[in-house]
Structures are given as structure tokens and as C-alpha cells.
Picture 1 (spheres, rainbow, N blue to C red):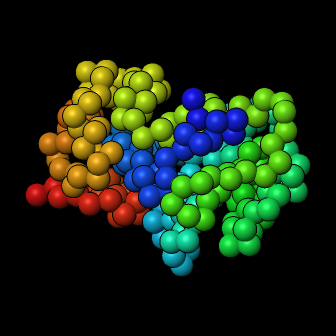
Picture 2 (cartoon, rainbow, N blue to C red):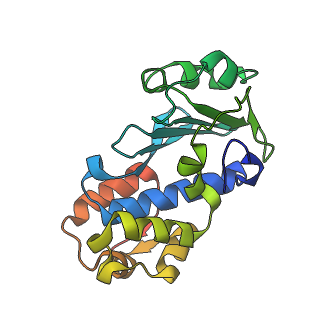
Length: 211
């Protein structure tokens, strides 16, 4: 399982961004009410910046910043409370400071922090020996479509068509294939608001064709 004790298993940042978009697209299809989603992606967070936001409604949150010159993951697990930000961000490159020490991350807090400024080679600050529950939050990022399916069928339940998600459709979305009506209906069975989904896909920056 990916965690701060085993972060070498994180995908490279290009593959990670692709996965983050995929799980946000899937959430947008399965849950049209934004406030009840786990994952959302904003491809226009700031100039040259994109962000994934995860929130479980019970206090755990994660923000992942994507830039052309790097990527930073900020996580907060409510079980352990905020950590010492100076230690967790020790040697954090300056390009991430505005994100790490500004809003909304500042108000949410930090219990773990990871970053990279090249293709791979994830780094962390001073990791404390206690449990930070990062594995519960980071495990979805392994790039395996089945990981999302297992999680979503438990979380969304009846929102999934026939209570299950087709692996072929989820795999296509993980691969970045253009989303079609047929793909959407294979996931959800029916959709209440196609216009809302289009707006969500534009914000995510994911290709679609509903003609």
C-alpha cells in the first residue's frame, strides 16, 4: 500500500495526474452533487497549476498540486491531528511554498506531505515514527482501475449501474479515452443532468463527446 512509509510506489507525476483526472471523472458521473463527492479536479486552479481535492466528509482531506515543474501532495488525516509543518515540509522546494503555506491548505492542516520536481523521485520532509494514516488516503493513487472500482462500489452503492462498475469502461477512463454517452450509461445506468456533467468535465479538463 502507498503511504509515507512506502511512497516509492507512487506513480510518476504525469501518470499520477492522469489517475487524478480519471477518479474525478468517475466521481462526477456517479455523484452529480459536488458536495458529496470524494474527488474533484480543477484544471484551472491557478496560472499553470492544476489541483486534485479529496475530502471524505469526516475530516480527512488531500490536495495535490500539479505544475509543469513539479507536484506536491498535502494530506490531512483527522485521526492524528495536524503535524509540525516545519518538519513535514523540511527541504520543500520554494515553488511549492505558496501552495503549502497558503489557503486552503493552511486552514485544513498537514499530517503528511510529499513532493517531486522531476519525473519520479518522490521526496518527504522529516517523517515521524507514529501512524499518520496516509495509506488510507494515498492508496487510491496506485493507477489500478480495480482499486477505484472496489472503493466506489462500497461508497456509492446503488449509484453504480446494477451495483457494479464495468472494468473496461473504468480502464478506458484511466487511459484518458474520450468519454461518450455509452460509457457514462454503462457506469450509472442513467444521468439526471448532462449539462452539469459537461461543466464538470470542462473543469477537470477531460475530453468528451456526447453527440
